[in-house]
Length: 130
Image (cartoon, rainbow, N blue to C red):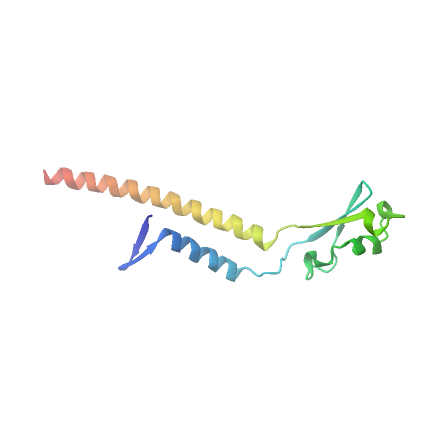
């Protein structure tokens, strides 16, 4: 396990990554600012309906929601003939995954560059001693 020394403090890379992940979770609001869509499937036909109240998100995407909207594909459908699936675009979870990936990738690249520079420095230093 690699560690980072900062002003006499040792911080393992696992703890550093965990701290960054917790920080991102705290900064990003739990309610998505993106748009939510409800996929209503009646019989074998499907329709996407944009959710009007985005503060509720996927909570309102139910079978009764699909039936109450009087969709043409759900005409003459019973509750058992309907299935509802919610999709969210630009959700907070997606943002966290992307940002965390970028932070980890940059950290790994920086670690590789620092190790290479350190190895060159130590080789030159040992060459001067002998």
